[in-house]
Length: 551
Image (cartoon, rainbow, N blue to C red):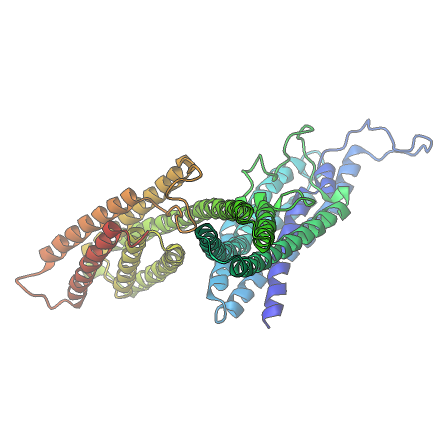
C-alpha cells in the first residue's frame, strides 16, 4: 500500500509537470502565433493553392483547442486525485495529507481547472477576423504557467525537505564518528610522544586506521550512489527531444528561465551534488589521506621510528580535522537553506491567515449591525458559517505551528502562534454560539493584530538571514550544533514583550465585563484560566531564552 502511494505521489508531480511543459511547449506557442500570409512554402517545388489566412488560423485553433481541452480534462482528474490522496493519507501520513489538502485548496483558489477550460473555449471561438483569439490565449497561458509552477513548487516541497533532512542526519552522524576518531588519534599521538611501547602503539594505530577506512568506505559508497543518480539524470535529459523543451529568448551564455541565475541561486544541496562526477568529494579525499597517514604511522612504529610516526600521526590529525570542518561547513549551509525555506513557508501561511481573519472579522461586524431583538434563524446560520471559516483558519495555524515546533529554535514565536491559535478557537466557539458581540470582535481584533506582528517578525527574520555575514572558518561558534536559529534572540524577546502586553490588555477587557469580584459567564471564566496559563508559559520561555536552553 505504501509503495502504491509513493508511485501515486510521483505520478502526481509528473502529471503536473507535464501540464506546465505543455503550456510552454514549442509547438503550442509557435502555433499560437498568427500565421503570415506571405510565408514561403517549406517545399518550393510543389505549387499548391495556399489556404486563406483565416482558414489557416481556424485550422490551427481547432487543433490546439482539442489539445487544450484534453489537457483541461487531465488536470480536472488530477485535481480530484489530489483530494482522494489526501483522504487516503490522512491516517498514515498526516503531514503529507496536510500538504495535499493545501495543494488542492491552492488549485481551487487559483481556479486552475477553470482557467484551462477557458483557454480551450477561447481557442475554439472566433475573433473579429474569423480566427481564434490568439492574443487572449497567450495571455491566459502565461498566467496558467505561473500558477502551475507555484503548485509544483508546493508539491515538491516535501521531497526537498526530506532530502535535506536525511542528508543532515547523515552528516551529523559522520561528524560524531569523526569526533571519536580525532580523540582516539590524539590519544595515540600523546602516547607516542610520552614513549609508550611501539608494538602496542602500532596495534592501536592500526585499529584506528581500520575505523577510518570503514568511514571512508561509507563516504565513497554514498558518493558513488550520488554519481550514479546524477549520471542517470543527465542521461534522461539528453534523451529528451528538442521539441519537448520550452523556447527561450535568452542569448547564448545567459541563464534560461527556471535555471539557477534567473529564478534564484541553486540550493546548497544542489551545489554539493553538482561536483564534477570524475572527482572525489573533499570529504572522501580527506578521509583517504588520513587513513594513509595512519597506515604510514603504523609502519613507522613497527620500525621503531618514533619521530617519523609522530609526523604521520599529526598529518592524520590535520586531515581528520579538515574533514570535520568540511562537514560543519556543509551543515551550516544546509541549515541556512532550511531557515530560508521555512521562513518563506511561514510568511505565506501567516499572510493567508491574516487575510482570512480580516474577512471573518468584517463579516462579524456586519452581522452585529442587526439589533439583537431583530435577529432571526438566518443570522444564526450565518454565524455558524463564520464559525466554520474560523475553524479552517485554526487548521492553517496548526500547520504553521507544526513547522515551528519541527524547527525547535523559536520558542517565543512558537508560543505566540500557539496563543493565536487558542484565540482563534475561542472565536470559533463564540461564533458557533451566535455570539457576535463586542467581546468576540475584540478577540478577533487581537488575533488580527497578533498575526500582523508575527508576519512582520517573520519578514524581518528573512531579511536578517539574508544579511547575516558568513562565519569565518575557525570561529569559536563553529560546529555541527552551532546552527543559526530561525529568528534571533532579540526578535524573540520583542515577541515576548508583545505577548505580555496582549495578556495585560485581555485581562483589562475581561475585568471591564465582570460585575463584582466574580462572574458566572463560563466564557469569561475560561478566558481568565487561559490568561493564567499564558502568563506561566511566558515566565518559562523567558527563563529558557535567558539561560540559553532554546539554543
